[in-house]
Image (cartoon, rainbow, N blue to C red; front, side, top):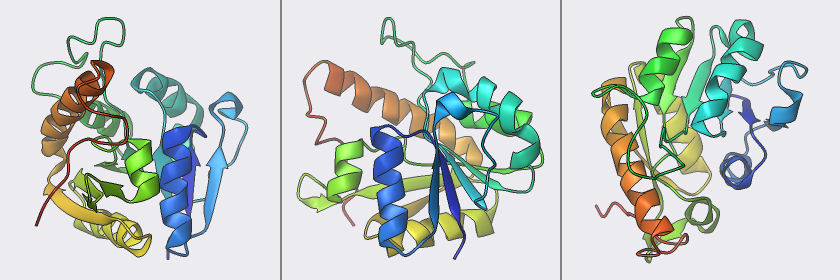
Length: 192
């Protein structure tokens, strides 16, 4: 099983790391304040940070991320107004990240989940489902397998171009939670 490095030690980073560890994976965490100082050990690197932090991570770790699977969990919102995404129309944070990391295999995942639903492994009485988009089938399958091994459902959501829709869904879910229309322990679920 691949080793995982999670950059970010907040609620999302901890919840995602818990899933991988529950599945038996080796997990290391890197605090964002240590950017550029820590060595990236994992074959899969999860960027559990806010969207504005991506550029600093690319600058600090770009060379170390070459050849690795990089998982973008961000939702590129305007956090001041909560009224729009801040990437160009038709694009995504994941597509921008992939352009900056051409030697990495970039995936989009976890952005449609809240930390509480990842930790509890349920949302609304249904299993939490992680949606995964990316252009590398082997990288997607490895992430899906690790998530499922950790006790959470996962679905291949298609090519990396689908990150655009996943980010729109994440934006909607966050807007509903901030507006107290859904709880941070709720959200969207996938029923099969």
